[in-house]
Image (cartoon, rainbow, N blue to C red; front, top):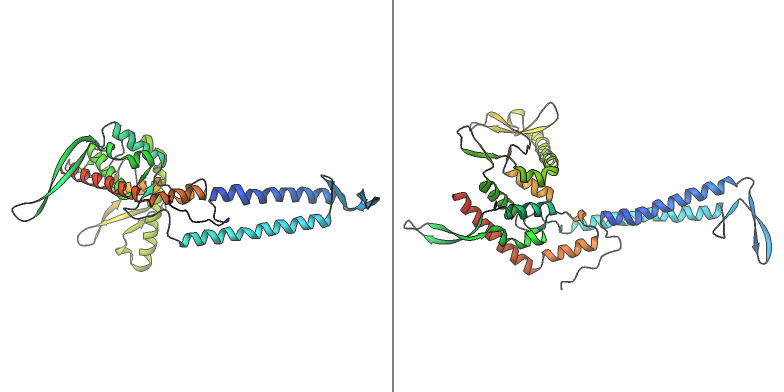
Length: 336
């Protein structure tokens, strides 16, 4: 079993931070305000009688709380303790910055393992059940009479989903594998839109199954692509004149990508993401939206344990096998 690095008490997830120190401080603040209000009500004329050294003594500007005498002095001590708790929150921030400097658990590499949401897993489970991922293929490399390597594909006769247990059972996969899997789904279902010549073109329309599982995420995909276009616009606007821009801002504040002719002249616009008319790269954005990030785990301990699993040799080996069969199958489907 792989050892997990000992965590600092300040290394917590956002949920643990909300449920732990933040909730505690909020509760203590409520107590302090109530206490200060009650002590303030007797500040000028109230007093209590207490026993000290066997004698009854008068305590002014004080109240009894759970048998304890509480006055202005005690309220001051309580306020000082609360102030220390608030100042200690800076240590959680320092730990978060320290963790951010370490290699990210949510790797962004196209081949690196990631966790994905249950909605994405369920979509591909259903797609496999309906036969919309087609069969799995293997390939062999041969050399033709011109000395070039040629791939020969063989249909295994088995559903591609049978080879994706890591994804379909554990929610572990890679961005590159998912992009290829979406490509297979697109080719198998024929959801590409026809171009002006009546041929299957570069644009895609989401079908009913995609809308069923991803409908709630389409806006997030739009927002993500708009943010990317805005960043590109702001960078290009700084260094290029208006005739060289690759992104344009519309009067309504949205951004569109510009297409240009071979001579570099503005030719048209690529509309922002629309589930009824989108390009293949938007699949990558959807994967980004549906991946499980560090902050999505219920606790830092669960996050660390899950991320350690992604580094296990057995997981990496199985992921490589699934990536190979999906890549080969994608090439075979594209040739049909």
